[in-house]
Image (cartoon, rainbow, N blue to C red):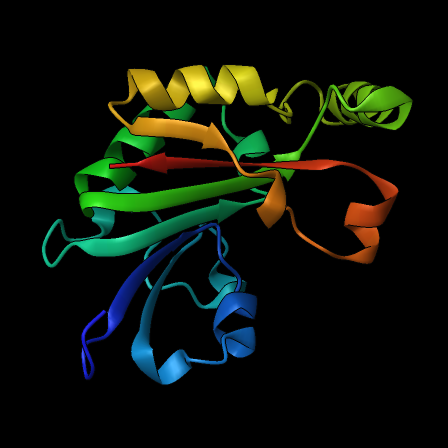
Amino acid sequence: MLPGNRVRVLDFGGTGAFESRAQTAKQLEVVRVNLDPAVRPHFASVQDVPVRPSFDFAMAFGVIEFLNADALRSVLSDIRARMTTGAALLIAELDPEAGVFGRLNSALTKVASGGKIRYWPAGELRTQLEQAGYSRVRDRPDLRPASLLASLSTYYCVEARA
C-alpha cells in the first residue's frame, strides 16, 4: 500500500467487530455484507456490492456454515469478481474434522439446525475456492483466530488469491 492510499476490505458476514479492532482503521475502508440489519451492514448481499472500485482484501470469518453448496459457490464467485487481481480472500471456520469436539459439534449443530448449518471441511472449501476461479489456495494455520472459543475448538484458516 502506498502512503495515503486506503485498503478496501470486503467483510462478508461482518458485524463491525473488525473495524472496531483494526489499529490502522484510518487506512482501511471496510464494506460489511450481512443479511442481519441489526449489525448495520453496508449491503445485505455480495451481489449488491458494486464491482468497481475493487477490493484489496476480503474475509469471511465464521459465516460460510450458513451456506449450502450452491450458495457458497455463488458467494465465492461474487466476492472474486469484486477483488483486484492477486488480492487475498481469507476464510476462518470451525473445523468439523478436528478431533472428537469438532465432529461432535458439527453433528449436533447439523441436527439442531435441521440441516441448515453445515461446517465445511477445509478440503471441501479449498475445492470450492478452486472451482470458483481462485488461485494459490492454501491453508494458513498461522492465522487461526485466537479466542476462548478457538481454544475450546479448532478453527482452520484458508487463504486464496483472486
